[in-house]
Length: 447
Image (cartoon, rainbow, N blue to C red; front, side):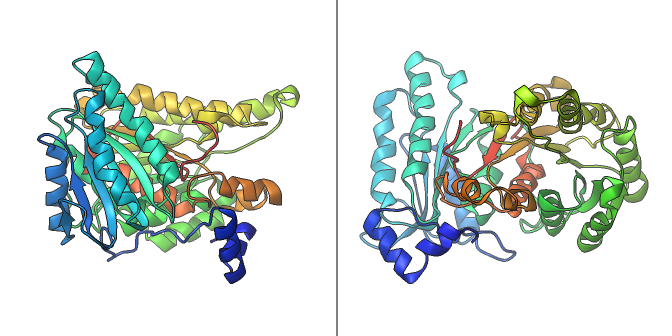
């Protein structure tokens, strides 16, 4: 793992020093590899009342030959804990979460998982029920900050009657695909999920377009979508043509050189996908730029170029890509936002504004009844500190702080962002729309 601090505290002397001083010690995270098990050990599953999501979790785990525990054994570690709190009626019921999870935390394996399942507070029947449902978010985020050794905690809110739609989300959060997703809230609602024939190739037969695919996070997205079975149209500016061709050749896809700010960019992408591959199922809006400057020194050109590439181009392309007969019904749109769009960042008012605008776009399109009627989902990822060529150029001290200021005490990798995007792109995830998931290791900066 990258970073001078990580190298120091993981050296023989550094380990002892970190233990004596109580310093955080980043560990190698469990990441997905083809053929790897869903989890590496038994999973404790429980919850008060009927706990319908606990029952689904048990069935899912058993289908993957994972040992399911009804109670914590006398010794040994557990790979994960799934706590179903969907039946809570008031604050008093929350003690069931403490009683189930608290004893298991000391026995949680490295890169373990804690998943809390609840209901949407906005759909509560009483004030007490809404308070209890909302309390789950504070509890889950706090658990994430207490965990060590690469373990994560996340909350899944499932609408009444939509329990079958949560399976793909539970799979993702339990697996190594979600290595850098920590303390997030995923909302699962109505939809008609289609389970893949092979969970190792959940995008088999799909055609996906990725903008900004020449290098970095975009290239990683193309790699993961291809690994999961998709045919990938790789899009980037002509100046990146050589790198773009390498990405397209590596994933067995096609390259399309164009500037996403062009008036006809959306139409050209759609025509390429339809003529070369027979249609379009997944759109990943990843292309983006930075032109950093303090607002006091920000000129019109810097402001306009970032807004145009990062936000304006998406709105314009979507006019073509989301029109009837364009993106297939049941398709998926995934956008790349940023932690800067949530928390802001010094010297990045233009970038933060554009990425906050992306979140607003997801809010609007996720609620669009026309898209919902067509079964199209719209979601976004918001990366935190990710190890890329760009972050490698950040001054040493700032770079080290960026790596350490999260609950996992390390930077994420481009593949972590790509895995989350690939999960959003699954037909099995048809009940998840309008979500923004941070891929940040539970960053301690901002929301």
